[in-house]
Image (cartoon, each protein chain N blue to C red):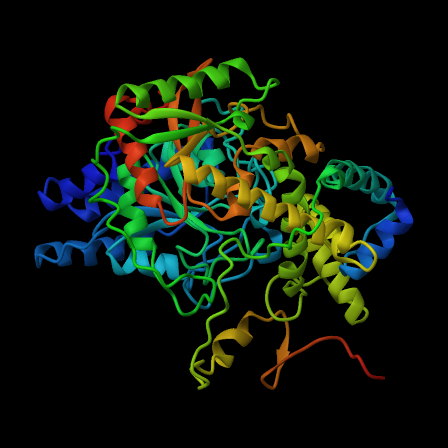
Length: 95
Length: 484
């Protein structure tokens, strides 16, 4: 399936990236190169093979259900580009 | 001092031939004098390093010798270091001073290591040439017109130029082993889950693994001994006992079965690269190892499988960079969506954006089964190939990289060609196995590396094979002419 500027725009929106008209065509070409290579996967005979997400197939360990995270608000909030009253600040969302 | 291995420097500190402060100052001075030619460091932490060195000298005076006491180490700028900028090679994190320290860095500091600074890398570890860094490319000390490989290019280059005696790296598809090969140093990617990923900025979480780069297998063993171990803060970090890597180094190779996968010597492989790896195999045969032909038929699909799985995981991991909580934010956003989109588009470089788009596409409605699920099925076939091979052999070997260091810019704007730089390393990450690259000679004056792959948790075996090889050869001790 070939990627064109329209697909790039749709996927870029899903990824919250901005793609300018000037770069869209070159980007489509590169993405088609990559997906062309990736399409070799279609040759594989995967039949009933189960997908593998973790190489060692171990299960997720559980810890005791008790709070052990310290309150780090004062350490973390100064890293924010903008904050107010102990909260992260973003442009107005509700008019 | 800079021509010595970490193991030799450790002995020198113990014998009080020099102090930790003298040693640290020597490397800091070398970085200051010479790194302008390489750009291997993003941040040098001189004051902190000297404070750590003084503390190490006090510990040594009190007879407190730990694994890494007084030894200077360069950390890849992907590991969070409290109070020190942690950029991951990206404009996105150019202003990010980490509020906590990665477990790897903390484990090494607890054993007495001194941090020299943070090394340059491909942006978010996405690259095989170190050209995608926001801080500019790193140059290869063997020929500064050439790339050092990537993504741990700064780590491998500073080590080869003897600007640091040891370095940490991370390896998602070859990012420790390929730069190690291109710079003539030794680098080990441990078993997935052997080393904690906590505080290591995530690229592809089911593939990422931290490991050591050193001048020798013995140096890597020393570092891994300090790095490895269970960490409750990383739920994928395995609770398995850590072997005695240093204790097993000298073991003889008589009867060792080395599998030689035919897929690592394809017909189109550069003859000089193939000959170089075969020469290394012959040396090990002389020491009593037996070569066994094996086949890993599915690994020909490892690059395409990787370039679905890694971007898919990256597109998810990198969604946290939204311009709200930390990192880069665009100027004067007109609304929240504009804030997200422009912060991300201005903060990420071209390769990172390409991979986010590929990953988002592969995970999007209608394509998930054809790409992501299929890639995960192929991943199982690849892992099963290795499992079959390891029933017959102890280690697998072949060239680390299909080429020596290429010229800066040679693969710019040709991502697929760049991705092939990792054709021999990527399958190992998909399977989660440990693997090491060791220097095995030179081709036209440029270093070549040979890869040794072990079964799960067989880091000790892999280090042992490389150490025995290095006892019989001196490729790993060669220093680039300009950096003697």
